[in-house]
Length: 221
Image (cartoon, rainbow, N blue to C red):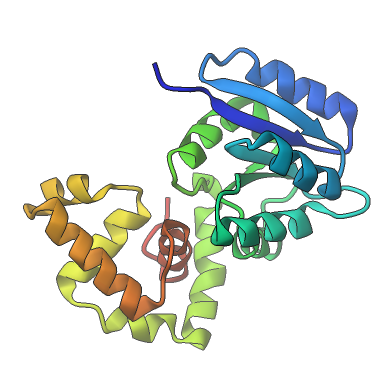
């Protein structure tokens, strides 16, 4: 049996944490291992408890959720650290793009937590990035504008047709073996294409595929 997803709840409102704990307590594949009331405490608890995912509120006193998310992303780049699933009141481009750029692996709007949070946790735990379908077009429009400015489009255009196909499948969360099945190539060949894409695009992790696929308008739902 697969080990449950270990979750740390970071929110400065105790009643919100209680509600989240109650919601997640009904899921057999999720275990809430701790709570934090601000960003500093979230970082300390993340180091002590080693959760798989921190469910992070943005608006907290002291160190806010964005700063804590950025620090956890830095730690993850240097070694083991949890992924971050952000809880936000906002569903607009001006809020969402900075979250993913800070290193979040996804976000859930608080009003939709009761219906989306469990699915989002499972997606993030699998190594993918969770983006609400209803907001994908918002991110795509904002990042498409940025892509034209920072050279992402030019780098993407330098990819071969097969590399572009692999690029999109990776962004959608497929593994090398699954990509191989869909494109009728070996998993080893699919991984070779992945390394070539990483070199050409300057990528180092899967989340960057999601971000840039949205920038390029390749993921719209």
